[in-house]
Amino acid sequence: MLVEIIIKILFALPMGIWLYRDSKARDYSWMLWTCSPIILLLAPWPAAIVLAVILLGIYLVLRPAGALLRCPHCNKKVHEILFVCPFCQKNAKHECLNCHEPVPWEAEQCPYCQSRNITKE
Ligand SMILES: [Zn+2]
Ligand SMILES: [Zn+2]
Image (cartoon, rainbow, N blue to C red; front, top):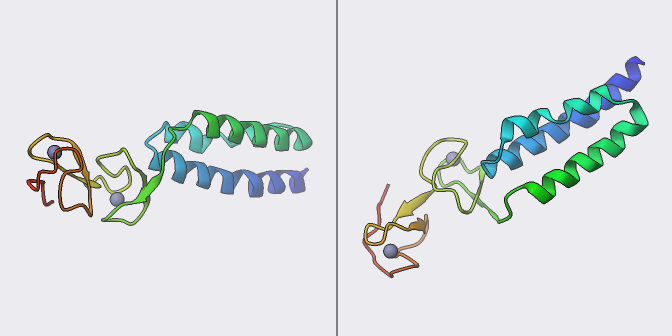
């Protein structure tokens, strides 16, 4: 019984850590997803594996699609569409002062209107 609980924790913990990183990077209900592997601890052992696969499958279908980029400040992975990094709360992108579209951090000019008038911070 105790062994079963330890195996389940060894299984649920990395899953929770991975879900935390990925869902927070995508700014997507990360508290809910980080806690979701707890249900594995409540399920009987063989069923817990099936539950884990279903849970990950649902997450992969529902999560916002798109690439993760590195935050220029904290170096954590952050979803490409986010303007502010969910980890360090700093701007992960510049803003175009002409058309107000987000500009990639390393870009010298706005990809939308080609203006070089972008925020520096
Ligand atoms: Zn950051
Ligand atoms: Zn622009």
